[in-house]
Amino acid sequence: MTSVLFVCLGNICRSPTAEAVFRARAAAAGLDVEIDSAGTGAWHVGAEPDERAQAAGLARGYDLSPIRARQVSDRDYERFDLVLAMDHDNLATMKSRAPRSSHKRIRLFLEFAPELGLNAVPDPYYGGDQGFEEVLDLIEVASDRLIAHLRS
Image (cartoon, rainbow, N blue to C red; front, side):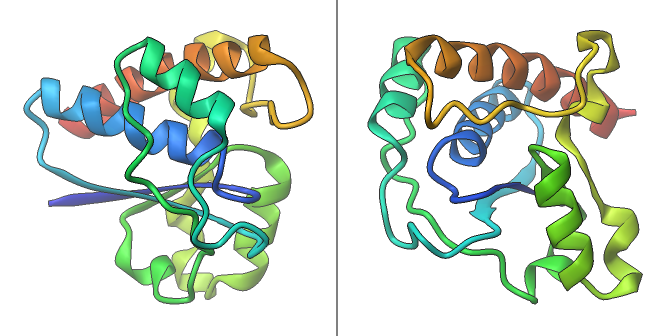
């Protein structure tokens, strides 16, 4: 079974959204995959996803409510086949903490959707509701491309 970890800064907006979207889309595609999310920081450990992320996700049929924030652990670098960062800062943080043998597993999530013309999922935390919609748009496309990649 393939395993995927989605990572952002606090694990309350982007990465739990990616976890929920990818979980739903992978299940619909019949893909057997272990899915989790985490943050590089520990500020929100144990917290539910941001209310705005939950509302935006629920409007599209994704339930983020069971997810609780956690921080990336050393064990995650060996446990997961893919560790997918939402942006360059989190990618750099993870690579600085990970053993060199794990670096090839740590990538940017949007690498799987080059047609989007972006390489980072923007952090919607300090913006308005539209930012959460944009995050969902990007994550849905990248999730579908990641599913295709895992199937090939």
